[in-house]
Image (cartoon, rainbow, N blue to C red; front, side):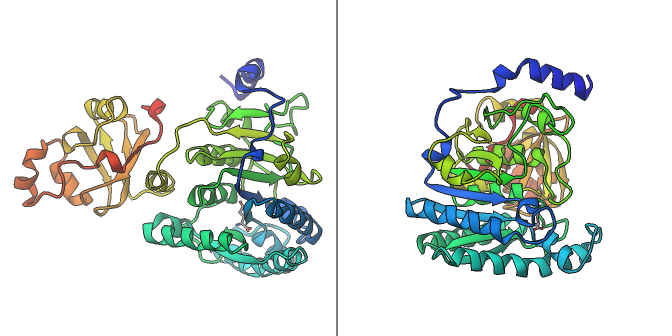
Length: 400
Ligand code: GLU
């Protein structure tokens, strides 16, 4: 099936993708704690330089929402784009050092404008730069959470970006849509609002398909959305519509709804908060994970994996059991006790992930064996399970 056929099918099936009453109020009416993400092309006026006017507009809106008792955290891109402008670089650099240098220069400008514009409305701001490593390490994750929570209590607006100056491929989140979803989950926000330079998610890319239709309300977990969102975004930012669809799915696993809307709509945040439907709402329709399981689910880079046999797959997916050594046929990677590892089907699809009770070298010696033999094989027993159910998250049962 070609991509074109797929899109035709989707267009045909559009009514099954839309959910709920088109006249229902926006999900933002109920949302007390919000993460608002603004993309590079909006923040830097398509690379022309930081758009202080636009930032002032969002500051005014955020101040109005705060007066209504809403709690707001901002995730802002734009450091690399602004750094390129300040360094007079026309093309986005390829090398890591150049990207890091541009981000370091541009982040100064971002912080300056956010601080100035939010102050006009009596709001204090705080700069927070995160890497994936900060969120992957349990202690640092909890620290980041308590700092953010404290800032919110103090009435300060945290302005978050990825710490692009120190990130390498191994430790980066990579795009701010994903970062915004991780922050949404970290602070258990009720909604994520992604402001972008497009009106929302269309049935196909509106730049090449003039008859594409804007989707108003969809299920965040609907797998068909990915095909519609395929394709790159603008030349300025990093994510396209696809990273937004995936971010919405990620936020939904923590129970948060996502709205993708144009940041150029006037008073977009206030109108959404007032109930108006603007852009595309991605409704969280899956069961909410506990905070610790959410942290496990949100790990982007795992140290290793376990390949499960058919019996273990059924035990995990259907019977809600723990993972025992006997059900594992292969250990991949190099990990320590307490790391998060993936559980793979024989075909290599991730079906779950969890905190492992044994290091990879130990796991390799006990797989395929009953738990009663662990002691004779290793000389000690940590636990009879490789991954206990309470430390296990099923990520995609449909992939098995
Ligand atoms: N952190 C990057 C920046 O500030 C943006 C990443 C993105 O656009 O998603 O330039």
